[in-house]
Length: 302
Image (cartoon, rainbow, N blue to C red; front, side):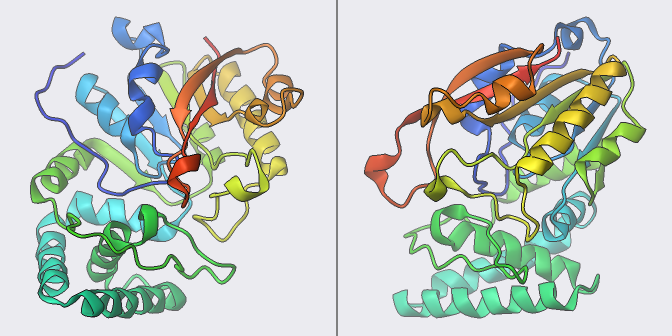
């Protein structure tokens, strides 16, 4: 275990990000972390990476393997890992443009940059990855509620956020993130790819797109490919395979009992494993009065 005075934060706002739950989750981490048996960390649904950043500051993993199905987000992490200086230069320029614009100009600038970003997505090219990453971070900091959402064509479609003073380029945090990523392997791919490398010295944390607890609560469209109940069940099979490898496995998801006390989807799916329910705040909701407390599940094989 290592100690640090830094407090590295996720550089992206993220629907379902685990920042608010880290204190609760930390109470359920595998004991093998403290004894030093865990050498490898795996996060097959990286997203905003809040738990990874916290864990990597607390524990000295020999290696970390981070997977993200969304190519734009995966490339974003790789750029921060390998080209942080050039990225910050681009972000500083975008920040200058934004704060030099009028109120109406800021909104126009946002939609112009959104279209530029979508041109990159449509081309599906590896060219211009630093510019594309700078645009992604800019849009994430200035869009509505910090969502990353795409339509069926895979285009970013979140509207302007109207923030008064968003922090577009937090240089100190970005440099710290880059430093932390130096010992990580970042891949764009399916969660099942982790099966190839996980062993009995591994800790795997799954934070998949949550199963919606209501029709209006679905914020899983960060990728154009839906994560439905069939995918949740496929994930359960991978969870079981990792358990057979004697890895320590933890999984987060929504709790359907918030809406229907008789909905035992996850209780049945993960029967035989240790299930805890954590208290969380519903953050992604356009109506502030409906951002109340709900429970989320935490499934562990230890």
